[in-house]
Length: 153
Image 1 (cartoon, rainbow, N blue to C red):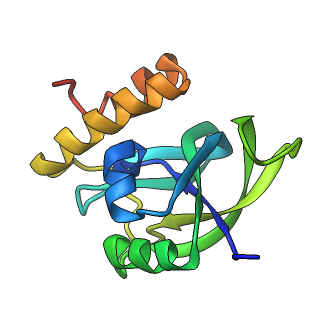
Image 2 (cartoon, rainbow, N blue to C red):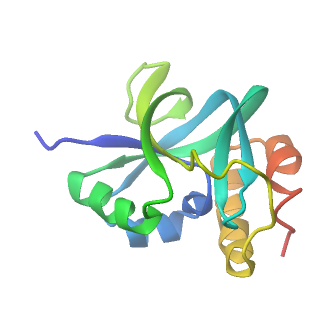
Image 3 (cartoon, rainbow, N blue to C red):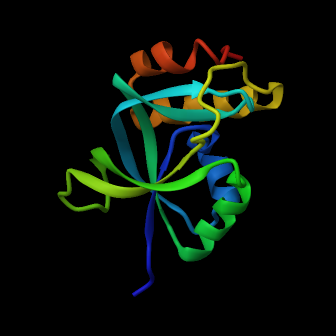
């Protein structure tokens, strides 16, 4: 059996087309969320999540092959730390009746202060927001957490 990793995407990898280009063997499997985390744009100009009591981060879950994980590591670079975090599942196609899944999450543990997005990142995030909404991530989450950083097109 091929080893699969569940990956929690919360930034521009919400854009399904970008995710498929970066990780060609990836398979979208559902929506999940992290309680007590907050979505921000950090000083590098990219999405990050930080621990924050009472907040929530929604994301898309993908099954990745080992090769996809290697590709993703290259795209995410060395600024993000690879962490395994238990993600609560909302709707899931192939994760049976599990309520949570240990998932690969990329977190920048050094740069936790809020800033402005890089200009090129706004387009990619808007594409990801459109896909996230279509898959069922709540619009009030997008409005509360992502829109203060990411202007609509």
